[in-house]
Length: 218
Image (tube, rainbow, N blue to C red; front, side, top):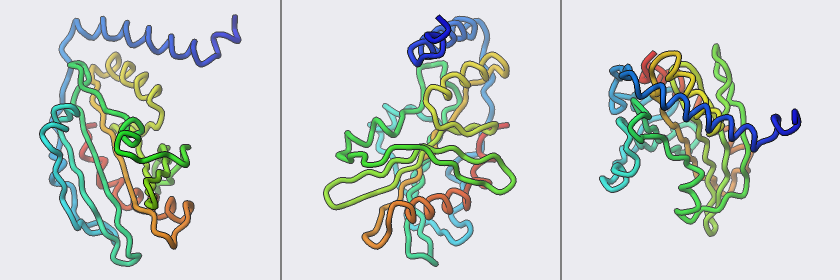
């Protein structure tokens, strides 16, 4: 019996029942939704990185995404001849059916096939490391590295299961369910191997992380 309780199916069932219980409890009170700084005011320059393109999300995509704040930008590193794409989608509540979409589900639909799928820790000076999902994907002769995680002011989370659990915990403890998904993508040049690409992406995250955190309400 104890072996079953430690198994993955048992953990999934536990998460399901906890979420169901929290949802029932949460419906009886109004959630506290806090004001956030508009993501569009996020800096266009930090460290050696400068924004080279401000993207837009099509209305049809936004209707599916249902995020309250979104930025999608391309930054260039003038010292390393490297670009990096930053995507952030913030949700001020998850009670009305809004929730982050996992980037891992979108990649295959766009024709990208994963060749590496794991997690890495990104050291942030003065903070806990950011645990991020790492995908190295290929489409034809092109390769890209994708890092993503779930973010609030209090923590960063890689696991989708853990993100759901913390949503319940925060709803019960703080009467809040706000969260964001942060995704970094860099194209991998022919002269760059996977580890070097990971290093570049991690340096990009370190450059913007402290500047992004204030955009999530404490």
